[in-house]
Image (tube, rainbow, N blue to C red; front, top):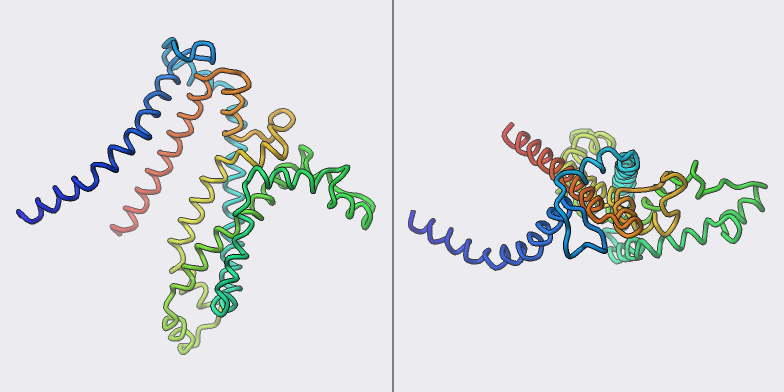
Length: 291
């Protein structure tokens, strides 16, 4: 008992500096944001905000553009994360023999995610531009026509494809590591029992990869949901806010409209939704462990 108490005190002592640092780095700005979200504040009154209660939250919830941005971000995040995980899984399985013999090739496969998202947006804006872009030029030369990649009808699909092309290597990296960690003896035993390749994938690989698949999907969904850089540089908010994500909505409310209280209130609502999702996932994981 005494030894356990001593170890607990040592743990608290070792964690105290990190805890104090996180409280100072995250806790204080969070309190300031919470105060601003309850205040009437702009760039003119940022030093003397006036408390107005939950008016900013009510305004954000009643704003159709807020829900439109949330729906865009939700669709974008779910679709991009799903495609990235599926593509990363297929590539991890297909390239496993090659990467086992030449692991240095993984460095080249990671290159797309090394480019800044804002630069990716500018690059594809040039590539897909209807007047100077090489893709429309060759499509017009070969087929006599080309789709308007950045129009309202096609912008969402174009943005998802660009997001998938840049961030599928991230899913590949995690899933390849998890796939390579599966003991080969398990697959060999299944092959001896007569299991086909598809049966081994369905009964052995996928169940053992399930935690990695879930973590990868969650990370990519969160990152895609809050996307800002490449969308803003590629198409901006779009006509009628058709490509306005939650991050772009908050940016416009803060810097363009100058309503800091509304922008911070929207970000706090987004934070509350994220915490609710995290708590739900933690509860599901707890239920799974107990059963």
